[in-house]
Image 1 (spheres, one colour):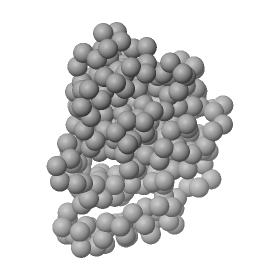
Image 2 (cartoon, rainbow, N blue to C red):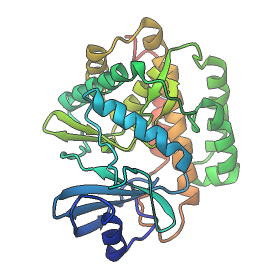
Image 3 (tube, rainbow, N blue to C red):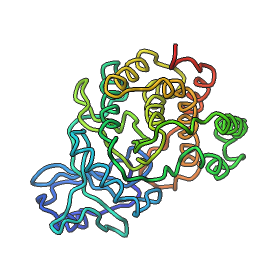
Length: 319
């Protein structure tokens, strides 16, 4: 979450007039994240999230996200559906952007998860995959394995070298490795694809919400677990692997949804892919984030360190 598009209180008040949610009391921009513009709204009837979709979200994809969230909510998963206006429309326009008003869920995101919180998150991810077994809509993963080489080219050798010496060469070698070993035959489904701790809301040790589904897509199902592992099982800077968190996360997932031997055996390669994916997108954002944007840039090297750990320790998912 972030703020690229500034919206005045008057504009938000007029926007809310389309809905049966009361009148605006306060609005606060949310600076975390890098993708869309987000505001926490409080009205006379409660709290809501206002999201304006920026350049990485194609408005044509919004019906997929809406259907996915509606499906998960109908199956009892803790997700925040988008709210329809008085005419039944969920996709709006505000300040020249597509926009949605979203249900607010209680809870906070943790920055240093415990084993119990990791286990609860793994279980919530497994529950989500179980619920998606009969979800038949599809959306291509625009940041999948097939697109990473092009993203590296967009970053450029010289600019990558400014982030870390020799980074372009490290990325090129990893791309070659993943091209050779990527497990294309594994089961596919809709996945979250971005389940970082800041996209999980918790009260104590229990998950109260999975949020920010704007990378959700159709891809290898176990890749979703690999992304979550890369996001949860290291120190923030990526230099310290947290084995107890890893065991708890995978154990929680396996308690809710069966992880096949083939999927477990492929997690090492999938985790390398997850680390590379976030290394590349963080590098691209580091290079291209506009000056003056109310957004927190995230260090690409945190995922370089994760990638290097996965490269050196291929047995952590099977030992």
